[in-house]
Length: 60
Image 1 (spheres, helix red, strand yellow):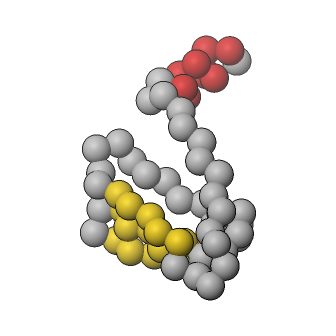
Image 2 (cartoon, helix red, strand yellow; image 1 turned 135 degrees about the vertical axis):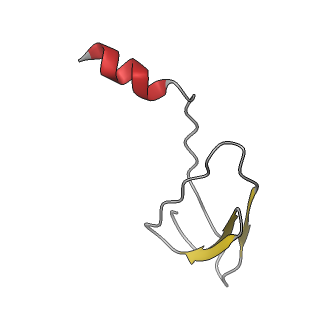
């Protein structure tokens, strides 16, 4: 989260986050998000393939 307030739904869990919040969306788990604060929510999404961790381990 960069700015504002976002309500996240990950599976059956609902949580609200503000600047500095991180959320993890596991594969095959229904999820949604919505800007719910008075200020427009701004987020930065990072998408990685499932095998990304193995790639990093192979480099060490």
